Image 1 (cartoon, rainbow, N blue to C red):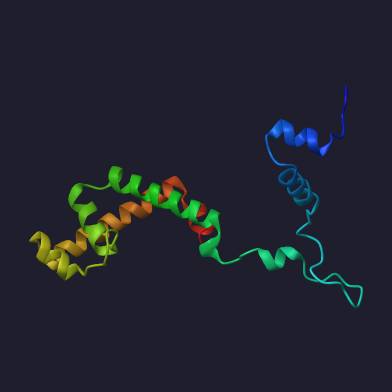
Image 2 (cartoon, one colour):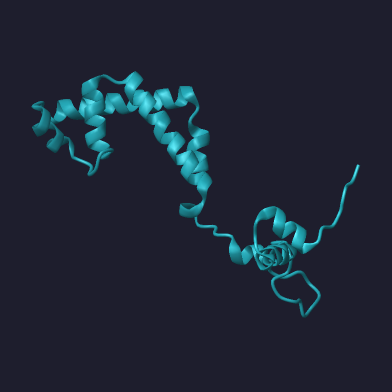
Length: 149
């Protein structure tokens, strides 16, 4: 069993149908690998300094892919709760009040849209919000809320 062997540049280029220059560039690129944990600059006092990783990594939450994943998972769970725990009118009021499809509306604006009193719309909205909170507790969605900050 052969664990390691070397081939001539011409042989590799012929097998890959590539020019020798392209193969040479590729092999040289592979040998220039650096660890991100390596010091970015030589230390003058002998203490460890900043690593290359600190210059490359983006710590902003909006650029963290996991924040987006958890955020989307939370949205999906909330949609499931809205569709399973709330009636059509409750769901509509919550959508309008919390601006799930655009801007948030007041109880007054919602009442004029659906033809109920402001107080009745508020009552329906608060009961619906309590149902959502209870369902979220039952599904233990706190872990998703913690992940997205």
